[in-house]
Length: 163
Image (cartoon, rainbow, N blue to C red; front, top):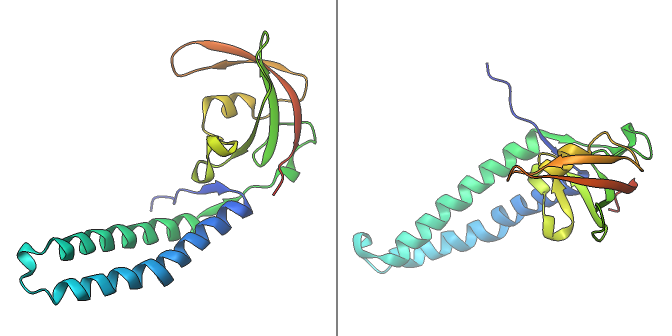
């Protein structure tokens, strides 16, 4: 039997997924069911765009519920406590500077499920995070980018991520 894929994530990430599943089940599913019932009352379903739209949305929501439940069921909670204080690890925030003179940037390294670069969370699978993982404060490393260019960054600080 094939081994189930695990989804590394923080406790906060799992809680967000659980909240989304709860919202889909308790709020969105009943709303869609009500829209389907109303659309059915309009008669001929073959030319009823409201009915088709609601059925499509229902299929999407049900698929999302299944996906989220699988992610939660196969969640691998990451703990930054298993690494040295100055070592870059999942669940930690790392501040680095692209050399020679770019502005410092700070990101928290998380699993791909909860990655959101605009919120300062990058996936452990991203080129930057993959290059940083396991390195320590003060180290200078080369990071290969998808476009074939390599940049050099210096790790300025590593700390526990704030919840």
